[in-house]
Length: 296
Image 1 (cartoon, one colour):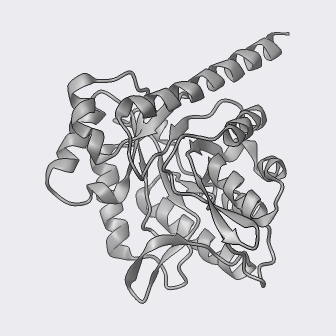
Image 2 (cartoon, helix red, strand yellow; image 1 turned 180 degrees about the horizontal axis):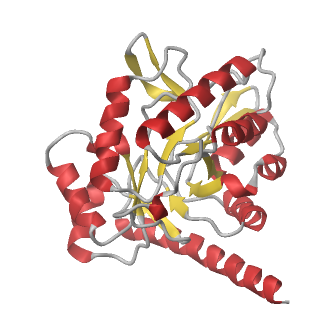
């Protein structure tokens, strides 16, 4: 089944092909008071399911800015099936916020009805692929719209996995009609941890399915025996290697809405805006080069 993008819906403000930032509680009031030069914001869906001040702040902010919703709790890879009550809460937020984009993670986080405080990796098997596709279909049907699915950052691999992660993600998009949220930092982190070719990962993804890109910082930890591991902690500026991979992604996919994520040790708003400006500069350069190429 095909689902319309949010741009075709009344009330939904489309996400511009520019750079936005992840909106966190610490910056609500500053955004309301100063209306900074930010093209769009993305929020975690689950942070706005309750009452109190947060949903009211978001109502005020979305009057001035396009907003996307990024979920962390649907557990698309859970073998137990989706939590119907949680899915209903997601739809309530979607109906209230009228986001330009809705996204979730390729992960699982629920076991025995208990929510785990992490996005856990999936075995890349045909069985897991069927589960994820069934759940993506269920979510899109229930919401009546296309969603984006984000590639994970991982630190281990299952020995019985039979499908490369990039092929798994491409198959989810092909079978369900969903889009892909390409997290470039996650690709770099996972490729570094597992010895993958990050550029090859990008080139395996279908360009037409890419609806958004994420950029973030990560940390490097000592894993012993002279080994290191990269941790996707969203707690620093984007590193040069990820910026370089981002440029390659835009050359492969064309200009795509891009988000700066920062979730730990949240800095002042102007630092996030500075990172977004860097992404905006790269986007505008690629857009200009693309326009010149088509005009030639």
